[in-house]
Length: 595
Ligand code: ADP
Image (cartoon, rainbow, N blue to C red; front, side, top):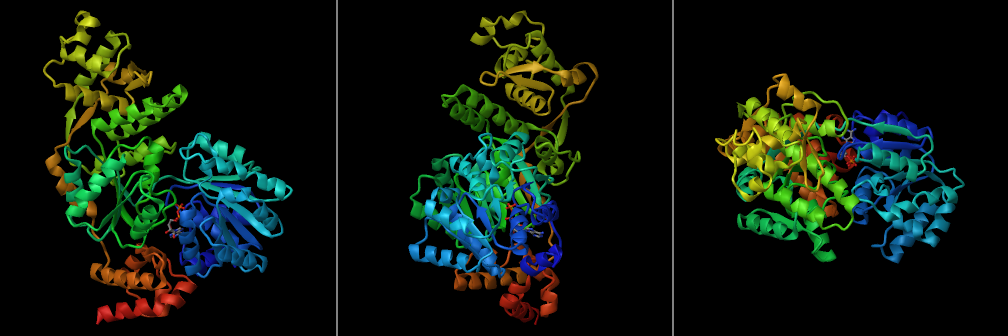
């Protein structure tokens, strides 16, 4: 059977997403592969489909045992024989799974990397016909990545076990070249087919705000989103709990998650969110790796994350089903101070420098005047259109202030002070300040002293932030950042390059957000009815609602209103198994609604 037909039969999709088809073909043809797709890009199908097309069992190595059950449940819902083995299981289930493997009754087996330390399991697996090994979240093998897991180093032993005859398909969402090279080297991939797809997540709307009152911003945003699933990230346990309490007081259906909770509470709160018993989860970044809930409609960061990679991964948990979703980053100057302080606590200087450099990228993201999507894509080494019309920088209707002359003043001041100082000294000099710093450095003697005394310090600081973000000033000596000029500075200083900054008035925000919600071309009442049916089924079968059907499938149903099985099969995410298992209930509900 060809791959496209199998895709529809098992997963109910009519077309491949970017990169999927080539990766699948290469795996089926026996090549080692490395697939770099963004979070939500559809990595799982890249190994699940070949697993069904090849003889034997596909062994999937996945870092989070807590999520294996969902992954396996989701495959079973599509009629695919999959199981997992992990330390949470009782011995009876474990031996039953081994028996099924022996009898060739399963096609996909999920394990954690630690399982490869278990000699009994290794002896057992050597007798099994393994089609190939899929390594999920492969960046965990790289020290350059942000979630290094020592146990991933165990994976290459597999070659010895199978006399070098085993094939590996690795997947990650981390795009940097160093990580990619590390994966290939450390996993010992042999002449692999590497596919790095575009990193754009078109359905995500990116928004950056610096509200005076973050909680007020969040509650105003959530007002018309009571029934939608969303994640709110905060940087500390204390902040998580206070945001949780705030929203609970406002009667939101909310839970929370951080590393200080007992394992039992963590599990319960996570499941409440996944099973739609709670709509909102407020969490530290301890939450979310591998969370594959597909209908998360927004991810809000209450504080600035530590780097661009973490941000894109966390924000990418919104809208996996391809439906419109929001990725909102709220920040304050205090966030930058705290992040720097945390980094300074590390005893390792080299590590501090790497982390500070990474932090600067996210500082640039919040300060940039450019299209936010273009900024992200360029950071990941991809070309992008100048404007996306789906981010706050493109959509905001802000006043543009021509800051070209002020920019020249800032750049001249950096030059006059021999490119030896950081932001505060430059501001002191431009403001003509008489403080201790100014006197110590004898700033008075410089010709740019006091040339911006009419402007307030905040404006000058913000302007410097924009000039750094958009590359007109270079920051070096990260611990005590020094502002330096570069080639691009000359464009402003000598060639009249215009620099604009935004005049963002907070009062406008509400109106803009309404614009973000967008119009929908499906029947919302029917959608809500179908959601209720999905919840009933999910409770009865004890599986998360999004595993029964994703929001994308329900939206498609509420749009096309299928009347019979033939039409139902055209719905996104409806394959043979889902048609036979659920078709009549959903068609019935749609008919009932229409009458
Ligand atoms: P990730 O790359 O983050 O592991 P997943 O494999 O979890 O992403 O896929 C994200 C979502 O996209 C899932 O809900 C999945 O069903 C859906 N998906 C994957 N491939 C396709 C496709 N070809 N067409 C439509 N939806 C798809």
